Image (cartoon, rainbow over the protein chains, first blue to last red):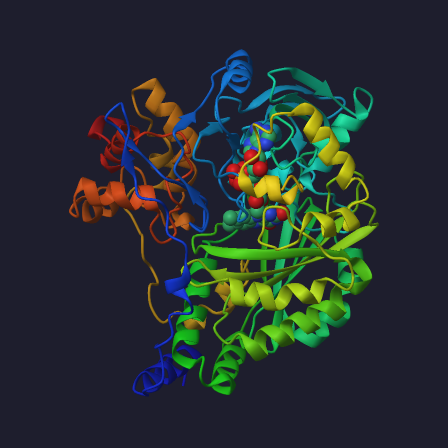
Length: 469
Length: 119
Ligand SMILES: Cc1cc2nc3c(=O)[nH]c(=O)nc-3n(C[C@H](O)[C@H](O)[C@H](O)COP(=O)(O)OP(=O)(O)OC[C@H]3O[C@@H](n4cnc5c(N)ncnc54)[C@H](O)[C@@H]3O)c2cc1C
């Protein structure tokens, strides 16, 4: 019997059993967006929602200023709260406001570059994916990329978005200068030598200090990358994690819940001939894991056996292509996410605890966990601040299912080692805890109050997060 | 995430395999741009990244086959799905400043197959 027939047959058998498919996994608890209303201009006022649909608001104005002057006037003159928005890919309510949303889509693209120094100045509203071709044509590459490339550069930096690699910093570490239009409409350039404190604060600034219109990046020479993906027993891959992370430019691990195997992915520079990535199948695969969950959540042993069997035949996958076609993937199955950054030495023991808790108490979870490493840096609100290397663990929940029971249950496991949450991913830390975990947190809040004395950039979430009550 | 499991779990492909195929190539889809420059700017910034890439599972711009089924549901239904998000499609696509009429125009543009001379 072929593996596929076996699995399909098993699934069919299970379908005849009475217990499957009754749980909606908290779908009824999911927040609903506000209904659209008709504005004075006769047009519907449309709700804004983030990528997963979990966060929403009903902005009165959605603006896309065409120039820095227009942006500065807007910031200085606007009434109510004003929030910059990138691609809406943050899971935390950093963006929502019922007043004014500002899109930076006119501040986009490669503005200038220096072929010798390998630097490039780009618009803050540039989507990462739109930078690949022009940078490559200019002989440059981003130091690293996250899982996807739909985010804007300024939006990514605002939450310390990162990829993986022990020697690779998060995206904001590639910034060597940036231009910030403050809430009073002043345009301030900053870099490590010009207004260095402002620069260190603005590198990761939650959209709370002003609007970043352009960023100068220190890039690296463009190169082909080789990506290798393989399956290995979870315990063995954990055993080899440190040596793989040390040996490869980029290394990460995915841990499939309710299964004994894990997946390793390495990415390294190469001169080998092109061998493009095949058609993306991740999205089908994650929906297959969901179907198995729907059928077999009540029978964990069978579920584990089936997933283990399916992974046995796996042949390692290799692809070689230009960097910007190797790093990002496509995410067509939506989810909500919690990711914590930890001192590197605590990563693997914590991973074991998280995996155990997830499997024992949350049979409904089918999304894999993602485990990455990130080089430390000095930006004030960087979760990697003060670390040589950080380790990250991310857990996910399907977008139609209540993520909070899982996230609330897993989050305490990160606290004894002073875990710092990804700013764009769900967490429940208070300003007091954040001030304990970030040596410059209070300095950041003081600077934010100076730049924005009226709190015009603060929505309720940011007000609470920064301790403004 | 989970960029690994697909090949690994290809054996588990219980349903949905082969969805979204189209006679239009990605290159042909990528070559299409709205004539109106403002709409073209919105399209390039917000829709093109997914609607010309088969891996995203979004219906490809210009694909009569992919859009025909959807347009049969009626523009109002498509508009509501665009505003609220639908399956993999995030709410409003990636456009935070699109008006309702922008969204209608973008949908109409993407659903229109290329004229023979252009394709
Ligand atoms: C499918 C998916 C995959 C992801 N993968 C990764 C990953 O691999 N690694 C990772 O670290 N994260 C990842 N994330 C999280 C994501 O990278 C961050 O949440 C990022 O901040 C989103 O960028 P954005 O452009 O969508 O910004 P938004 O979410 O729209 O905004 C984020 C913040 O940036 C601010 N902002 C936006 N533009 C500006 C500006 N011009 N000036 C000042 N502030 C601004 C906003 O006000 C807000 O505070 C992922 C998210 C999703 C949905």
